Length: 105
Image 1 (cartoon, rainbow, N blue to C red):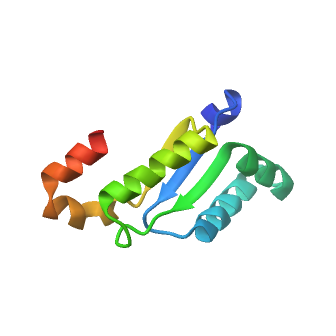
Image 2: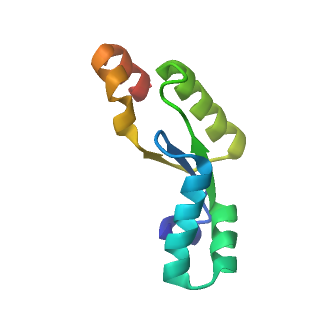
């Protein structure tokens, strides 16, 4: 977060596990404990963060990756944080070559 604020960067936080509302609530709670002022927290989150939740079972890996790419391009994202990647293990186990190929590309 310090890197994003210092360099005025945008972070895309993608969770394969939790909803956007849950992510935002958690981040607000944690930052409010550190900073003490919810207005400052909201300003930081609105300026530097974009939250997205993707159900890994609703889309193929390729569809999810295309969607993620669209978000990065449209929202001018500098950093991507992935949360809950363990939810992708079934896809990886079913088609390891396709999984690694998609993730690398």
